[in-house]
Length: 144
Image 1 (tube, rainbow, N blue to C red):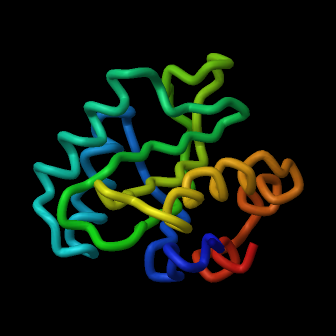
Image 2 (image 1 turned 60 degrees about the horizontal axis):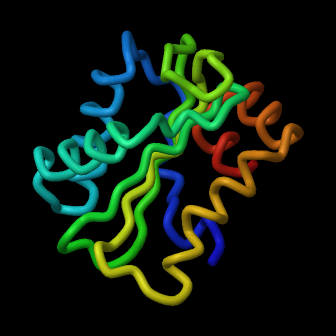
Image 3 (image 1 turned 90 degrees about the vertical axis):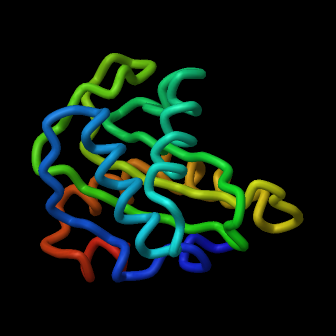
């Protein structure tokens, strides 16, 4: 499964203002819920549940908040580049400025199971991350 299978240019947010992790996750939950025609409270609640298990901040300024959602038929992604890094309780203690917000079907099967692994693998590429941080707009971020 390719990231472009669940991330569209319309869902690349290159200049997000965020004051803290909780507010960012609520805002991204609303955006994703609207795009997927889901209840924003449900998405926000499931994302928060996952974060309670442990931060999805994977280090080097990157986070992949994700959750399984009832009623979702295929993976959905948002890529947000934050204007200023925020504390995300990441494993390395560094603030986060690149966030890939991922929703997965509650009963994911086959290729859908690889969506999270695809994102994590891609975001470990330091050249790609450098390109994302230096991109000039949404289309440029998506092209990376």
